[in-house]
Length: 191
Image (cartoon, rainbow, N blue to C red):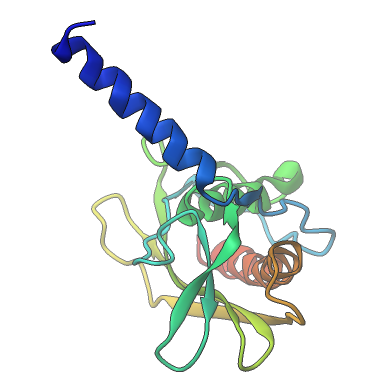
């Protein structure tokens, strides 16, 4: 094998060796089961649900743990199945689509009269309080990107006795479900 052909093979072997020594993380998804009681009045306009904005470390596939007032870490053994903003967008759309009770909801790029813009401010397990905390700001925009009225911040907490993968995800899912219900009802009253 010539040196130029050997280099890619050596790099591939090193990459495989490095990956095999890394601890494997279990992947988790968010639930789309909101249960009953989510229905709001039907939307009067078609609504596009934009992918939520978020800053690092929330804008990733890692599960965030708040270790103190200014300290953040990730669960070492767990991750989301995709970037968190994409998962939250999918769950928002599912919440609105629940039985099509609230009107027609689409992804951006499809014909819509209004846009739901959201910002994930907190999506974490707070170790000091033993709670999962979800906080999402929302506003309704017209097609030019101008707010149609005042926005609102939605938040919820759920007990998080353990900061391990399954327990953390269950608590975060519970808090998100509460926030999604709030957002659906508020949006239906606005659009």
